[in-house]
Length: 161
Image (cartoon, rainbow, N blue to C red; front, side):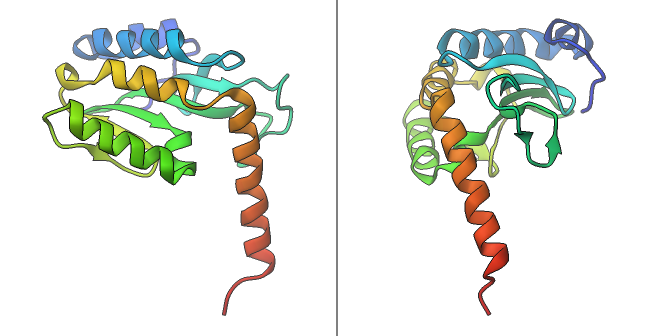
């Protein structure tokens, strides 16, 4: 669901009460484990962590002038969503996460390209999310993002027939 909250604190007040505790804990785990340089903020109707414009002035390619998103946390209608752009960009990180999730959580993993969905807040593997948050530094993420942009640009110039 989209919330028109202006700050993470406001977001926490705007979301349904039954999601607030889990989202607050996710936020705290990420804050405690995220490498230095990322900043907390709001984007796309959710709270999250991003590369600040002062560090990467180009911003997000689809919305120049907006910080480059890295991790998002959202209270959706039927689940809590954690968006992690590193999982989307790094197949080896996705593989690690899927394998670790299976070892630690008895429920089936519900995951899209960058979105991990938790239908039951009681089954969120907070320790695993903390480990995931530590996996990519700010500089590594910027480098990864730029490599992805370069690959997309080259593919659009030389499409395979």
